[in-house]
Image (cartoon, rainbow, N blue to C red; front, side, top):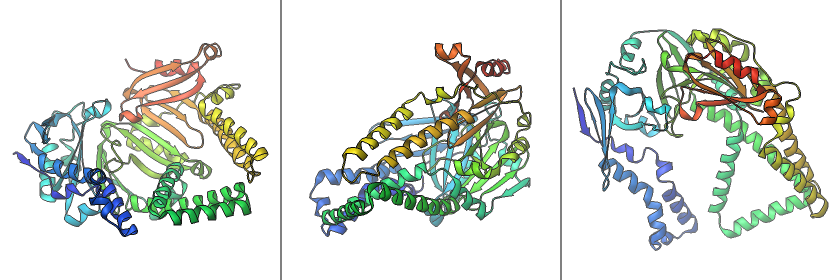
Length: 488
């Protein structure tokens, strides 16, 4: 049986609407607010810029053809420069479905196809958008290969899962909202800053000046320190509310099915995603805990697998297995999926007297500079009498973070699995199958080497962005222990 050559579904043109049509949308909104659309059609430079994304998408749709036969997937694309990608079915590791709102409305599926090159710099990820009938035909053809790469191929996935009802775990809406409440807020603050600055750019100059005057009056009345504290508190409250709502929407209906040979994960309200991961492709896990999660003794358990958990924000998989799991249940939960994780060893932690090594870095230097600038402003700049509070908070945050890094750093190794932990306010603990570890390296300056201290890097089979992790400033004996457990 053969499929194609055939183009994808026309919804491909607008499936990433806010990404590809964002400049055009912003230009139209500005024109409507100002009541003058001539800025678009009288300025050829602006017109070219705002239409570049939509035109590229349209051209990509009309010039891309997909063909699947019994041996390979072929993708031909390009208008002036012709490209042809041939992907052997035997190397395909993952074929998954996802649907955003537009896909659900029009009955369309997006296929995300990965192959084994995801573990290297030569990442191959093919994304195709088809109507339901074509999507299932293509998927069946893609997973039909039987000569997989070390068991990574999904050729027998359908047979393994068909009619099989394994252990099923559903996550409650309350746990999903709690997850959003407890997750780290750094990325949210950055996104919120971008949204606010973009929104202000849409206002007229007079309104922007009015807002600036209102802020200046508030600072004059309350002081810059109190104003900043109030704004920070408001931002935190908004982040907590948005975090809960966003987590509920993103992970709505989160469900895990374990049939013994593979695990199937599905979730999503606006964008529905379904993934199937063969257990023999899982290299290990990482337990992610924000500062607030650690206070409650919980965290999120995620996995490492070839061809899973990589890509851009639109198409990337969330490598989460248990959104919210108590710390004392982690070992048991991992062992139910990978028995190699059952064996535990004693962690090697930084030696006493090693704390000062964690303060060597650009971050702490910048915190000291910020504290010095805040003191200068407090003493010599009008209306900045309280700004030293901000400097003190930045320095306190930096010092506390370094102390937490010292407490969280740890590593151990045995013949079944290797584990390390790192991080400050956000702690991450890695668990990797010993057979999937590719290398272990130790780095230390002469000064550290004399003290028996080194930073140990463990490299393992996983998506490239997550394939190397470091336990900082641990005893050199930890490196010796780990390397003796590797199978060369």
